[in-house]
Length: 151
Image (cartoon, rainbow, N blue to C red; front, side, top):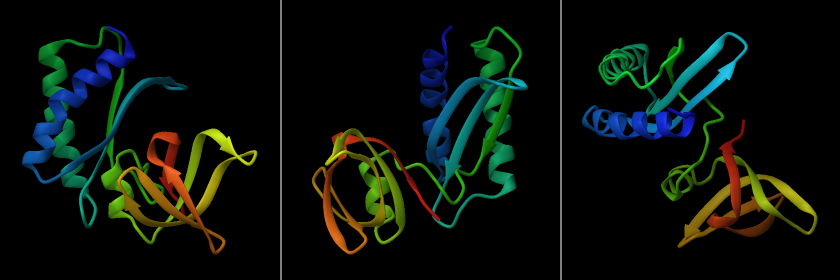
């Protein structure tokens, strides 16, 4: 099974489990790193997550993976908080973090620039307002390649 299918399967299983616990699935990664293959889940909730949250999800994901036998080779499972520089993936993420600093990378440059740092403003439909050094900028959510909170 390829990485994308593993990620999709893990997301499908994990979302309802996390929802029942009042947690959010921020991101799932499955990739080869220097120590071997790593399946990483980032979870969050208002006020943050704790070690017990991560351990509980890790146990449930491990049991699911053992039963489903999705991964045919050795891997490590890691469940953690997305941290202070959390990725912004959905419109709701941008709404939730209005007023916070963010780094936004666009798919296509605007005036020769693809990366912008600024304060997240209101979100109207698919338009994100970003205050870049006092200048208001409108960014279409569909134009965003990657975004994350910035410290």
